[in-house]
Image 1 (cartoon, rainbow, N blue to C red):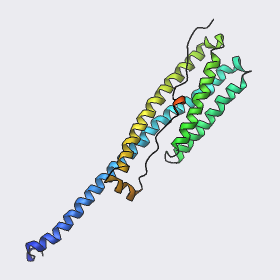
Image 2: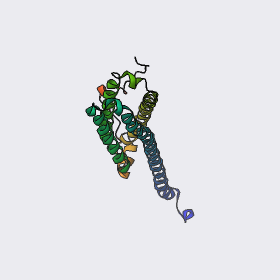
Image 3: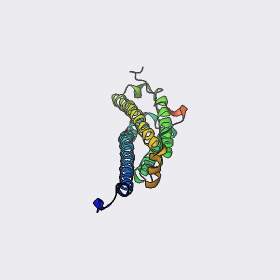
Image 4: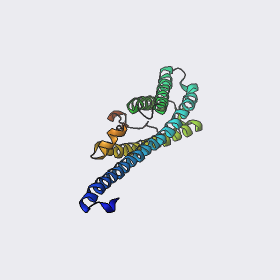
Length: 205
């Protein structure tokens, strides 16, 4: 059939097909890049999830270890327990909503950070508690976990930034709009809650 067509006619047939194929390939490439970037965001969040779960598991042990020494300071212990429950609820909600609601999780985690800092500050007033081998171990595990959370949060934010750049820049923003790719939320924390709980080790006297 093409043999019966003149060169200009062939060009009129082939050129649109070639352009359409190029467009399809470009759209597919941009879609795949967006999909991969979104997977990386979710994987980065899963690392946060692991570390937050580890921290949440440490909190009841920490509270129980201090209870015998600080039972009369119930407000401090209750604040930690309530903040832990709120943070756990926030991250459970994230798992069920495709990692939407990062702001709520950041706020809840910051509240837990503050409650833990308050608990650590009170522990300083109890030399026998500071000298406890169990408390020393729990504090070390908490600090290690907090550091891991910080690293995981930074990696998550880096992944989110790369994904969001693809969502908003031309021409991949067109593909993002067509296929429903929305910007992901960064983990943003207020400046006065960025510090991890302060822990000082000592034998006490």
